[in-house]
Image (cartoon, helix red, strand yellow):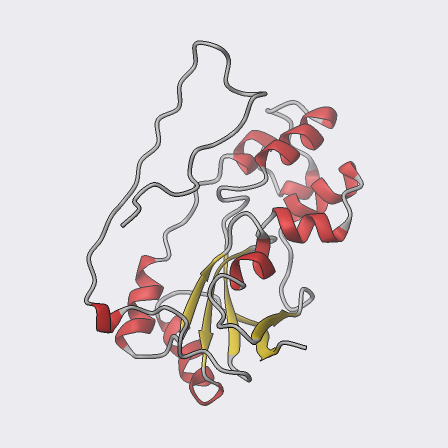
Length: 204
């Protein structure tokens, strides 16, 4: 199996000639019968989002280009609620291990979407079976201020924002309609703040 993925950053504006990048990876083992691979996803299934803590791992080239044209790293614009631009950009990618384990243990997840480069739609397409598509309502959750700042200051089209950033949704679980209330309850009991963001529909 291939262990090398797309985690080699290409940032020519950051890395100088003698700089180097250190990347880490985690490899796990799972019984084949227990793999949640999206194969059970059906039309009508519900998309439930979990919040991101910020940009997570994607969109930094655009974010830096826009924000540092207007601010220094230590500036704290009012929109960021007291955080500096540097702090907002450096917020750590949170772990979703606990909610994922909880949903798997309760057999409530038909698929998971880790929202990275490509946004909600681009990453959902990797999980959803052929003939189906994920239909997201981008007004279903509150978009964190840093994304609104990037869009406004950089005059970034909405389509580009959706393709580049997670926009506040770091993980999506796809659950059957009959399981949605239990899914929401289990996630809340685990300390999460889930929100319904869309559904699976037949591809037209």
